[in-house]
Length: 370
Image (tube, rainbow, N blue to C red; front, side):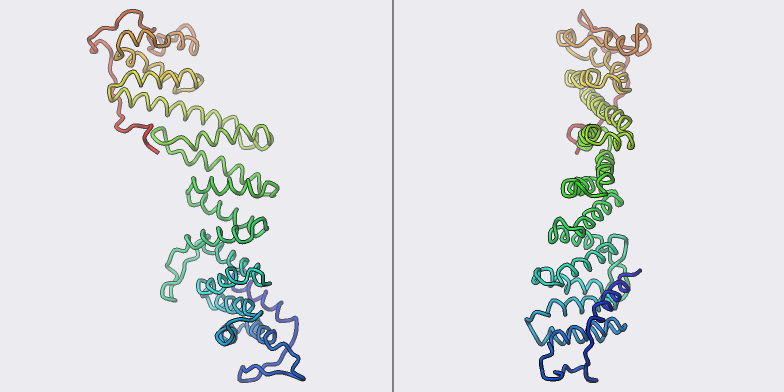
C-alpha cells in the first residue's frame, strides 16, 4: 500500500464521523440556528474532499482557512489536511513543512502524534530509496539525509513510544544496510539502552556486535571496534547464553583474539622497518604473552630472531626466552619448525649480514591510523 493510499484511507475514516453541507462556491455558511461549529465544519469538508480523491480541492480549502485565520484550535488539523493533500499529490517533501509546523508549534494538539506518524512514513520511504523531486518534476534528488533527520526527530519528540522505537530500529538498520558501521553501532547501542524489553532486542544486540566487528578495517587501523565487540560478547555470554551460542560467540571471540594479535604483530613489523627493534620486541612480547593461541603468535616467534639480532646485546639478553615460548606452543621440535632461536646469552655478531633478512613492507605507523 502506497503512502498516499494510506493517508487517503485515514482521511476517509475521519470524514465519516459527521455530515455537513458546503455551498457550491466553497464558501462556508452557518447552518440552522448558528450553533454549528464553523471551524470543525471546515476541517471536515476539507477531509471529505481528500477522502473523495480531490486532493487539489482539499488543499485549496485548507489553505483558504490557514491564510485567513492565523490562530484557532483547528489550525493544526488544517495543517494536517493540507499536508495529507500534498502527499496525495506527490509532493511529500512540501507536506513535511506542514507536518513540521504541527510538531513544533502544536505539541499538545490531537494532530501532533498523527503528524509524527506521517513523517515516519515519509522517512521510511526515503530510507528505502525514494528520491525527492527536482524542480517539482522528476525524482533524482537523494533524500537519505532527510530520512535520517526525520527518524532522529521522531525519537526526540515522542520518546518511549512505539513510534520512537520503530524509528530507532529503522535508523539503525539504515546505517547497517548502507555500511555505515560506526553509526550503526551507536544506533543499535542506543536502541538497546532505550528499549531493553522490545521484542527486537535480540536483533539489536546481534547487529550491534556485527557492526562493531565490521567497523574494524584491518591491522593498520584502530581496533576500538574489536574491543567493543569482545566486551559485548563476553557480557552476552553471561546475560543471554542462548543468544550468545546462537550467534557463535566462541568463534567470534577466537576471531577477535586473532585480529588483535595480528595488529600487535603488524606494529612490531613497522617498528622493525624503521630500525627500532626495541619497540618491535615489546610488541612481539605482547603477541606471544597475551595471545599465545593465535597464528600471529607463531609468526611473532619466527620474527623474534631478526628483532633480537638488531637489538643491543645487553637489552637483548633481558628479552624473554622465545625458544622456550616456542617449545611451549609447538613442542620439542619448535625451534627447528619455527626457526626460533634461543635468547642470546652472549653478544650477537655485529655483522647483521649473518642474520637472514626478509623485507618488511610497512610505511605507516599502525598505532597512528584510526
